[in-house]
Image (cartoon, rainbow, N blue to C red; front, side, top):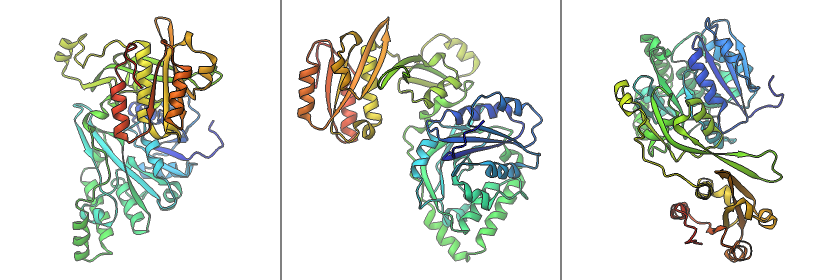
Length: 456
C-alpha cells in the first residue's frame, strides 16, 4: 500500500521481459539519497517473471501496473496517468540510476522551469568501457543541428506535461525525441542540470539496437517536422550558434568516480567505507559509525550504503581483468593499501570529511566549529549537552565519541576549548569558516591525528 500523501517525484519505469535487469534498476531507484518519491512500474505484458520480481520487493513506494502489451509508448502513458508526483523522473528498466540523481536534480525545481535533464554515462555490459554523454543546453539550435534531444532517463519533467503531451503510441522508436520536439515547439522551458544521472547499460537487447533502420527513419521524420517552421538559413544560423553550447557538467575524474556502481561482474572493489547510522534509542542526536570492507560487499550492498550516505572515499575500485588474470590476483590486494584506523582516528577523519562535504549546512549559519574527540568514558554530561552533533564508534570494545559545537566567534571557541576540553583525554580543534579551498586545506592538514601534538 502506498501513502496517500502526494510525493514530490514519481519515478516511472516501463518494462517488458527484463526481470533480472529490472531488479537492478529498481534497487538503484529505491536507494536514492532523496526519499520523497514513488516508483511506478508499468509491465507491458511481460511473459517472464517480471510481476513476481516486482511484488517480491517489500517497499510501500512501489506501484505495479499490468499493461496489455500495447508497446513502450502506451506503457509510458499509463505510467504518467498513474503518477501522483508533481514531477516525473523517467528511468529505463536496464539502467542504473546513480544514488544522488534525484537529490541533485530537484535542486533545480522552480517556477521558471518545466523540464530538467542531465548527462549520462554509457557502460558496455561486457567490457566495462565507459562513454560520457555530456549533452548540450537544449533549444532549437541543438535540436535542428543534429536532432539532439535530452537523454531520456535523465528527464525530470512536470507530470502534468507528460499527461498533456503524451508519448506518441503510433511509433515505437525515437519516441522521446518526438516528445521533446513537440514540447520545444510549444514553449516548454528546458534546463540542463549538469548532473550525471545514470549509468546506461549497452547490451544487445536494447530497444535502440533492436530498432535498427526504423529508429533512424523516425528520428529523421521528427527532425523534418521540427524544421518546417524555419528557413534553411535560420537552421544553419541556429545550428552554428549551438555547436559549443555544452551543459555545465563536472567532468572531473568521471572515468573513475562512478566505477563502484557498475555491476559486480565488471569491477573489483577493495578498501573500506564508513556508514553513519542514527540511533533511534538515543535521547539526542547520536550517530553510530560502522566500518565495512568494500571487498566483501555485493553491488546491492555497496549501492545501498551509498544511498544511505556512506563515505566512499576510502574504497578503491578497478575494472576486472580476464578470468586468468583474476585467478592470479586472487587474494592479493593490488589497490593502494589502507592503514588500520583506530576508532579515535576514524572518528576524527569522519567528522572532518563531513565538515568539508557539507560545509554550508554543517556550519549552520555560524562562523566557527569546535570538534572534540575522546573515549566515551571521559565525556561529561556538560560536554555532551553543548554538542549539536555527535558521532560514536567502537574498536575492540572501546567506544569513542566525537562532538561538534557551532559557535559565532573564535573567542567563544577558544573559551569552550579551554573550559571544557583542556584535559589530555580529548583531542580538540577549532575550525574557522572560510572558502572551499581553505576548508579543504584544513581537512587535509588534520587527517593525520597525533595525541601528543594537538593543533587548533
